[in-house]
Length: 128
Image (cartoon, rainbow, N blue to C red; front, side, top):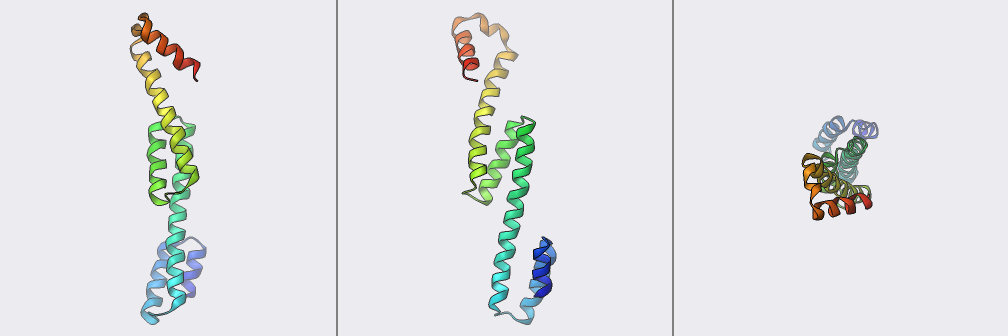
């Protein structure tokens, strides 16, 4: 049990799981073991969300909005009430939509010769 808790404290999750499995064979009804397993689950979840948060921040920095959206969605699948993911997802979706609209005008600039698309493009730029 001690090895499992030490490994857990050092974020060596696979090693902690192995040690806890060994401890369970020796003392299957140990209440402390059940608590340690819960800690392991929470620690793994926390590490996963932290990694997703970092990767999403990198994608935001690179303005890769589609990838950022996916990473924020993955974080919310792990922790549904993660505020950073919920807020980041909303921002990334808005930016992705904005870039999609801008890219459409860049691909077809002749559309701007018509009044309606020109007015839409001007409104788009005014809202940035």
